[in-house]
Length: 341
Image (tube, rainbow, N blue to C red; front, side, top):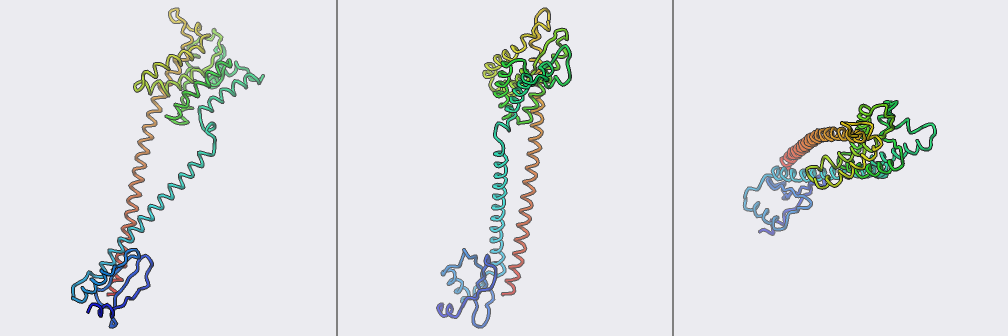
């Protein structure tokens, strides 16, 4: 009996998109109600399922409605399609942005992108210019306490009276400037160096009398400020032994650059002129460290809020689009099931 029923049945394939293929079982006399089934190309009905379906029809048992089957299958199919499209789009966007950032990073050598190298190069260029250009005497760029000028507050942060001073400043700038660069970025490195140099020169201008007739450089004090911001202040609580080992060496080397100014300022008969630049740079470094930490905290909080809002907006948009597509597919499948039923 089952064989005869199966022999009389044949499958009519409807012309629908490839992603959703409907197989309708029909008798020679017409379409049987409730016999609509929908299958995905990767989920075809097995022989056992076909036999069970035919047996249910023969026994008169009620089968699920065709509209419900199509609607359920459409939801699954469109959910898979949308999730696949979303994943591929995000992957392609991430890959393209990654390629763009990598290309931008590889555009310039590391030495040209590093502020520490740029600061060291500026010190060397300034020293060579003063040594080789007759119209640019060193007294015009160093802080001249007898006839100080405003621009000397900045130029003295890059000028040096001797080759030994240049070598020491380049070494300290490379070692401690790279630490500041890794922790706080490019602009913070420039800001710390310039602010410490200008503060040291300004304090020396204010405290050291003009009758001393000195020419001083603020570059060693600026390098001392890089040490304080990069190593001294942030690692004081975490690694005090490291700071205790490095601080005396850096302090002695920096203060030694101003030994010639020690007697220019006396406190109770004690020469302290060589400490003026060091103190000025230290005050500026402490202020710069506080400002950098506050600014970085505010920027990080703002960035977290922006990323969270963007993530929520994208998730809501994707969910809305998926629900809309699933609803449209369900309605279309239900209408098609009613027409075929």
